[in-house]
Length: 260
Image 1 (cartoon, rainbow, N blue to C red):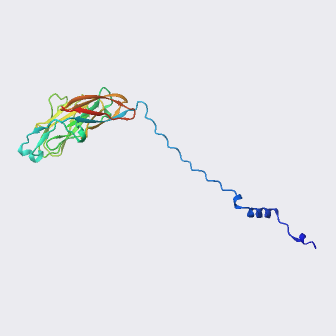
Image 2 (image 1 turned 90 degrees about the horizontal axis):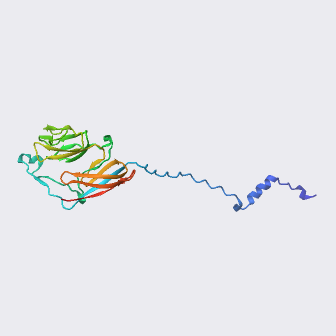
Image 3 (image 1 turned 30 degrees about the horizontal axis):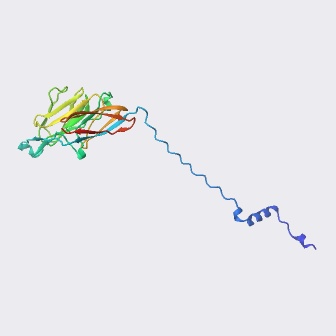
């Protein structure tokens, strides 16, 4: 008998499976790497439109010695409110020589009064007007407050286009005061305490501001290009400067104001 003839023949499928199992691992196909996640690129910040308005953020420094304050003689019956010693400074100078109470504005540029900054209230506190210098759009109004426990009488100086003369005997009393309908400076006094003085400068455009305790001022929405800046101080007079306002940017001029 032929023994070789009795062996069963392997099927083609079985032969292929056996070959795959016996093949070395290195010959097996590697899985495809995952596709990298798509991260959108950050969109670039658009450049400001040509001619877009800019901002002026300046500082004013007094160079030299500040003038001495004006002494005030306080009646004995007012020391409990005003203090035993009261001074009226001609120039308020902060850290680093920053000059406050300076009105700054852009000259010769018209603009809507609706864009003007709102004026702060003027408080009578410690026998003084606070703040002492205010800027506002013409034809608006400012609120006057009496925080002292005594009588004040607020009055505009002679020649004002909108006269104001009001007694304020109650602590916490608030009275709206209409402002001049034309550009200029209005002087406020108190008939009861003659050393009390404040100044309100009105404008027919919105491009103005007042320097703070550090000498900083900000004027927003200024048309791009060359701007003529003007500065006014009630005791130091007036000065000017030229500045370039970048479209959509910020101009940062430093103004050195020589002491008298």
